[in-house]
Structure formats: structure tokens, C-alpha cells
Image (cartoon, rainbow, N blue to C red):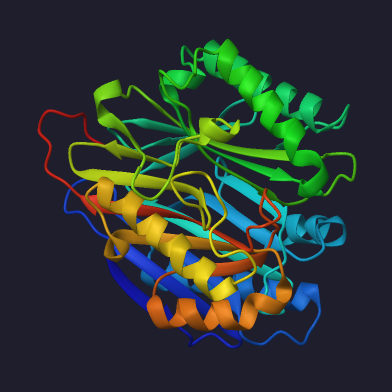
Length: 382
């Protein structure tokens, strides 16, 4: 993986990772944040979008966005303005969530781009990316408004599963990754857990089979009555032997041991590459206990140790990580965590946002995606 920090655009910093292939799609992840943060939302968004589009036009002219996530500080007021300003390509999945960037800006952006791909809005909110070797399906910013968090989560996941079924796919065989953004997570997360457990059980996803890598974290949709917002990622035509699940049992326990159902990480191996999706990971030990309660520095160290152990199980390391999202419960911890991440990852694309974790004792959580070149003749191409 090659990393670069671009700061030539006024008040904007772009952190880039790239993994280029002679044949097959090359991979680019951009994390775009603002260094000048004293103006209003429209000006901030305009500068960010201009830098994004200018950089891609100048340096990545053959790359297509396959997924974008905007992190906003006030989604109710800002999303309508952003939607008027956004010029995403048709068929590109766009996630928008209220998770305020903790550097003091009103907006940040994670963008995943690839070459040699074709996007289209496939079916009922499912966006397709055709790489020529496989089909990748994403949904973004889906929500319900009726009932509590349990009812909304169940309806979201059943609706998604039904749409996969109509495409000849299943939740258990094809879904690789989910994100669940939960309004007021301290009150609403238990309903999410129960609903996810129920749906997974109905779909044959158990501790004896497998679950799905996921992040369940605080986040808010623009609609006040939407207590849960869902993003998903699935792949068609994939064989089970291409998928492996990551446990790192010396460092972490199975999530089912404390009543939740998601995988710590999932590695998907293709003929030319491996993609690794690390779920939201916190300072936890292999007995499911919060480690170093109240100590943000030590929790950050243990969290990164856990992430590294999961990556290692997939044959990867931090040098293969394409992007990182960091979630903090306490805004007062931003300065120390930002310094730690800048020291450890001086050029990696990362962003730090305000988003309390599902268990109050966890002060910080991190997720990431790693991508590594492989040569696996027995597997289908990406």
C-alpha cells in the first residue's frame, strides 16, 4: 500500500492510500478533512467537494467512486444542503451520517474509488459495482421510522434480506459487512442487538455457522424518528472458501459470549487480492471485559493491539490498511488520540469522529479496511 498526504488545496487535507494493479481494478481510499474550519457549512462543504473533485480529475481520472460516506456535525440542517451540492456519479452509493468530525469542522469525507468498474443503481436502493470479475452490492443510509430501535432494525434487515433473495442471493452467503448507526446508543442499542440476533437466527446465521462483520455505533439520520440507519456491502458469485472469519482468540472472545452476533473481522480472497474488513474494535480482552477503564491512552493501545491481531490472522498488517475510522465517546479525548494516530499513522487515511461506543466503558473504537495483493489461481477474479 502506498500512502500520501495532499495539502495543496486551501484549508483541505487529503489522506490517500493506493494499491494499483496492472490487470483488474486499482484501489484508492481518500479521507478528506478540513484544516481551515472557521467558516459556515456551505463554504466548508464547497471547499471539501472542490478539492475532492479537482484532485480526482487531476490525479485519478480513470477511477470511479464506488462508495462515499459523509460525516456531518448537524445532519438535520446540513444534509439538504449537501444533497444540492453533491455531484456523485449515478449509481454510486452515498452514506450520510451525523458523526461530527472532532477536529472542529462541520464535514469530512471517506471515498473509496476503483478503476475499470461500472456503477449503476441496480434495484430498490441497491447499488451495483461491476468489476468485470464479480458484482459488488452496496446500500447506504437506509432507515425506518415506525416503532423503537428493535422494530426498526428488524424491518431494515428483513427488507434488505428480502431484496437480496429477489436477486438470487442470501444474507448468509453474500453479505460481507454492515454498519448500524444508532441514535442515542446508550438507550437504543439493546433493541438493535435483539433484532439482529432474531434476524440472523431466522437466516441460519449462528455461532456454529458464522455471523457478519459489523460496526454498531452512535450515529444519527436526518429524520428524527429514525433511530437506526443501515449501510451494507455484499458480493455476488463468491464461494464460501473465499471467505474467512477472524477471531484472534488470544486477544478477543467470540461476540456471542456476551449476547451479540457479529464477526470481529472478515477476509475475502480473490485471485489477485485480499480485502479484510475489521469490525468496530475496542479495548476488550478474550473474556469480553473492558480493559483499562477510564484510561484513553491505554484503551487506544489495547484497541490497536486487537486490530493488529485480527489483521495478522488474515496475513495482513497496518502497512496494508487502506482506511481507518476512529470513534470517540468523549470529545475531550480528541487531542491525545489525534496525536497518537498521527504518530503511528502519519500518512494513513483516517478520521476521528464523535460517536459513543455501544458499551459505556469503552472510550474509543476503531474499524478499518485492509487490501493486499495476492496470487490465488484457484479463486475467482475480483
